[in-house]
Length: 341
Image (cartoon, rainbow, N blue to C red; front, side, top):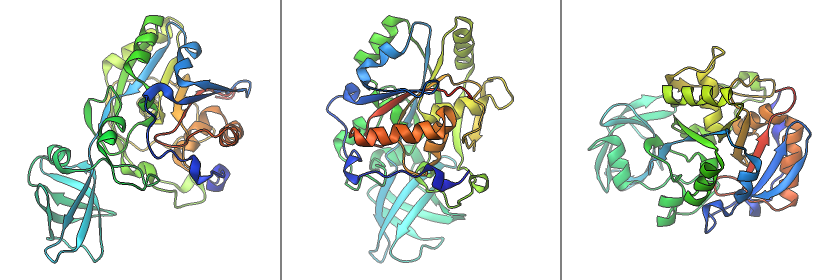
């Protein structure tokens, strides 16, 4: 398949620039992969689409305030964007400046001097004046996506973060999780819907455009994930009672499918470069909750692999006509798989 097979037209005004007043106030497009039916819903209708015994799997990663601003000794402005820690006080980052960046450069920031150690491909290794995550947490800005071209605010500190975020390490939010609030989670629990957690630290590569036309030539960016024994047990129990495993977000789908690469879900931790496209045989995920994704993105390709490319493009065209809100702070979909999947 080719990158252009996943193109769609999106009016810019449909790109959500801020969260709604309430997390669960978003709209929800239910997409039936078996019949091709589309149904306009509210996110608070989610309990109607789930049943007792189903298992919701959430990503409990916590977004780090990954964007940091500083100055060279000459006064030139530098932007540092955390990719991931390497050890206690070293990290791999993206850096932007008006002039060339060289090893040895010392960047003055509000929290102290960040020293450039060396280059690793497209990333720079830097040394921070204190433990990496604590340093960015204290002095960084929330890493809003590039399609939200505004400064972050105090609201983003809360809302570009799920209510169950607990393991710091992501530099972008697992956005399907952003729709869940305490009252909705309580309703689902009362209904008998179970929940479990996986950890996948979303990297900045999630926003990188594909640079090749042929999908077979694309090398997926690596993201760190952990699937523990408790989650494996929860999935097995769900299967035993006839429930469905519902992945809350594409990050959860990638983590679960990566942990089942040998055909059976197993506890593991490491990095995944799994690239899911149409034709992939899902081993663990039975239903998917997800936001709307960028044209020609790997995330749209993953959802198309789950429910079929033609149905996904039909659903996106419907969402545009019905004026759904798109991307990170936008509306959501509840997707069940196509017959082939």
